[in-house]
Image 1 (cartoon, rainbow, N blue to C red):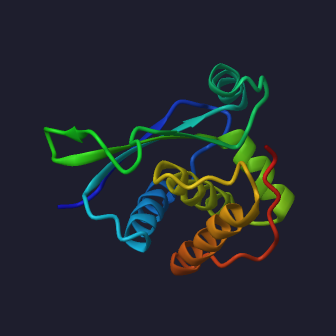
Image 2 (image 1 turned 120 degrees about the vertical axis):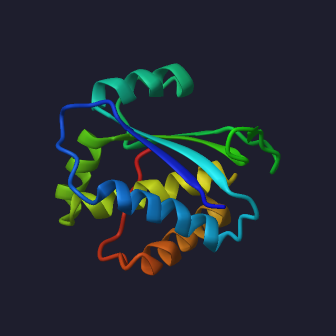
Length: 165
């Protein structure tokens, strides 16, 4: 039984490159495999523009500004609801600003695909309960996992990232 990755494009600011949806599915699957997640999972990924992600960021985090990605985990302490229709556990939602991803890809000098893959992997780890908000060892640990998964996807890191909070 396989994972379900539902991808929706709710923006017109950036053309979604061909192959991006496949890459996102591969990124989601790679994280679940790397983390030895025991169940088939359902993940929803939505592409939005900066205006929409700023609204969501304000609504859920009281930060009225665009960000690159937001994660909405549905599980709590390793407990998940199951979609009875397909038997998948509901892992949560990933919302990516394609505008911001494009800006960051240009800033770091790599492809939009690579940026979106990084954001997907990063967000997937949030859905599985990892956190970097406190910094310290947990943030380092999360970054190491991101690197390992991106390497598996054939996207080793070429530049250092700064995530703005």
